[in-house]
Image (cartoon, rainbow, N blue to C red; front, top):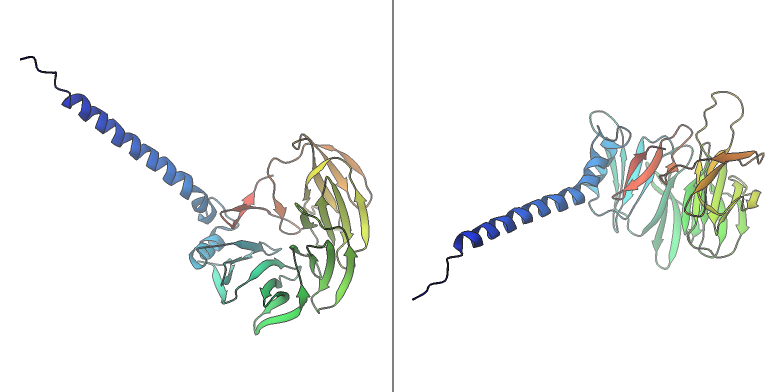
Length: 292
């Protein structure tokens, strides 16, 4: 009787190759998933935010947003029912925990005061977090919140901009059209606010919302405020623009004088934290230093 040849050795080799392939694939997936949080936490890979991120990652496992102070020494992360601020220090970051839910957005002003927009009972309240507890400022409906030298500027979904000072006073109001896909950022000194939308930009004086510019110097895709490199003399409000299509070229512009020149835009989108930087990018809902 003719017997078919045995296939066990071949089947065994196939099984071993399949197991080895599965192990390699699993390892690749593991590093793809974990490398970003690791880089964000490691003090050696991110000397600015390393200890802060380690603190936030342990305190707020499920983060939905974060904010960075203008001196880059503290940051806040929040979840659906918790907000935690970590402050850099040796040997580890110190933290403050608030049992607060409904945080919509947060920002630090020029005096490192922390502002929260908290939604509760069909309204959103603006609060300043103080040692004795939150100090209510008023009701807003923020789409975006950015810290300035004197307080915050709020962009509401209906297109209204509101400048709010630390004493609760409203410095200015501007009614624009409802808008989506916007970028709202403050200059290095917090004295100017830029709103990028629809391929153009508005620039306002942060304290009063007096409009300084409203134009489209190019098909504008993104704006980086530049660091204030001068130690003496008046602050210059310079910005770098990425122009379309696909950020293929750029401009450097002085928003006060309109002096401008062509320049190659940075490749990474990031936000300037304060007068000397750093630039901050998002990684796993944590702040990481961006190299521009």
